[in-house]
Image (cartoon, rainbow, N blue to C red; front, side, top):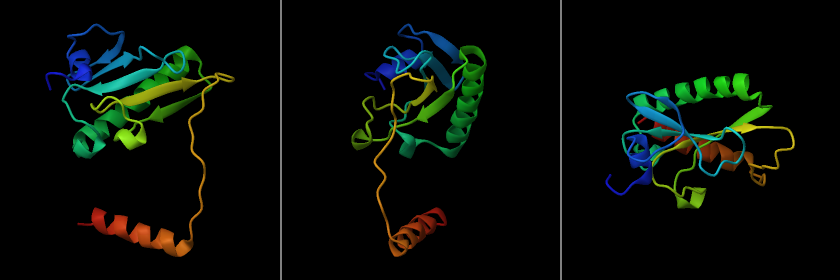
Length: 138
């Protein structure tokens, strides 16, 4: 996609602090990091979100996320780590090129990632579970 900033970064047309690159992905340090070492996994092939991603790429992105997380734990000595991936404006996506955040967490880093827990009834959960299971089994 010609006007996609992440396509340009992934292809090396815009400079970045790259920590990993192969034929499918470029992994960069975020320009506005939540914490020290905050990285983004960018597929080189444009896809707006996870809904456009094929299964093979989805598998490979999570294998790569695991490798990066382990390297961060070893080198940055982080106390934990968040893997965050937003899909759609309502979910907080601001750049419409799939990307996965790998955010090292440190004691007292001042960051929060969370939601307000809701409630649900067993009947409602069962109905939703059936709808999703039926879609998976198509």
